Length: 121
Image (cartoon, rainbow, N blue to C red):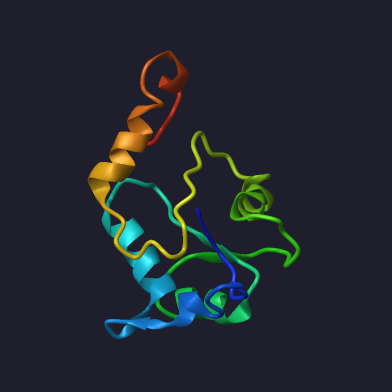
């Protein structure tokens, strides 16, 4: 899950800024998908503009309410009725997600705690 809000206080509209011809949020979404680590990648946003940016480029996005204290709270709202073993929070301003780093994180779920996890393809 990639939490994404349009109203950043230090750098407003940061996720909609262009980076090499694409928005930061679209680059983050695409790089996360391209790692091949996850069965599904979804942007969770309170912004119609971000929602449209992702879905108009073939991605998956869901709308959340605007009043969340954190990205984790935004994700919790989005996944409350989903059947998921592991949910990973990839920040919306991480356009260079790499497979090795994400696999290292997911490796923490190996062993007894992770036997039921479906993250591996």
